[in-house]
Image (cartoon, rainbow, N blue to C red; front, top):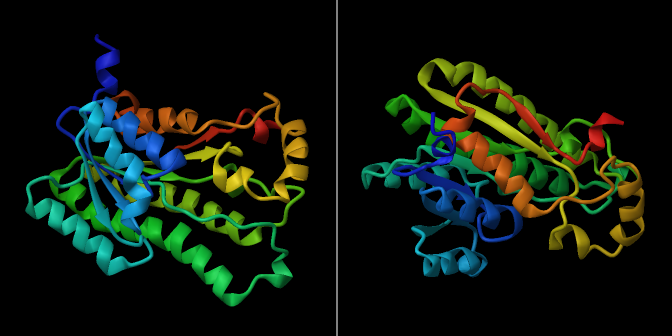
Length: 257
């Protein structure tokens, strides 16, 4: 058995939402290094510049514009790829937004709805749009970006809307896995800890929170984007062929305490 070959994705078409920065960008590079042709979905072209630059390393990278909260647009992208003879066989639902410590009583209707629209609805719209073509081909792998916040209630920052959206992503993952397993489509998720990305570190209030987070983390550190991407690559590849419906904690042990 050539075990390293199980991580290869030659001949596959992978779609990564929000693939222009941080975790998403690392996922794009990991999948491309494994041999996949990668399609990045971003809201604005400027956000995809770093992904496009990966072409200079010989990787096959395409960019299409769209908001994952736009169901019709996601369906159109999935159908267009299929019409071109390159229907997605891998989907990484990475696009998402965070919440900067807003107490539940102060969350506006608009804040709540946008969180659900992007983190939950967007994940489902993409899974449905691309999953249809995977089911037609009787094979495919979907990896959703959940969060340890879908398993716990974080402290000290209040972030009810975010926690709920990610908990829903976890259960969506299990539900789709059960429905689609017989159709040859695997659906798993990763649940990362706090990752050292600009979205986390640029927030002024987090400077006081980070020591608390690290004290609550057995490994005593935040994660790096590439550490999440490595788990995504595993779940997207044949190396995880017996796995579906799994929520894989990539959390430095945060949720064991």
